[in-house]
Image (cartoon, rainbow, N blue to C red; front, side, top):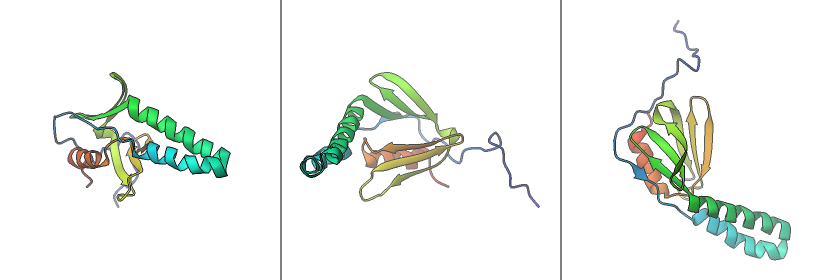
Length: 138
């Protein structure tokens, strides 16, 4: 009977990069704008709830303005301005998914040692095409 138990060091990624060009995802302000617009009537009915929506929308707007995501030949990179904040090597990816295809809201990906959930603050179509090209699901 084959051994089906793996340690984290035995695991290899299911994904391999297919391209060498760098693609920067264009910012999308859809989620922050919707949250801020929804907060306006909520402020009149439920000020605390409306305030939470407004603050979350403004925070995500700031993130959409300042953060940049790039697909390189080997990594998914996160930048604030021109400063590299974090690198996510494709070789450590095990799974990814964009939730709610009709209205993409959350991008999920799992690395060998961690799980990440990101709000869609960038162009979801470019995101999906880069993921399918560089990290195809098997």
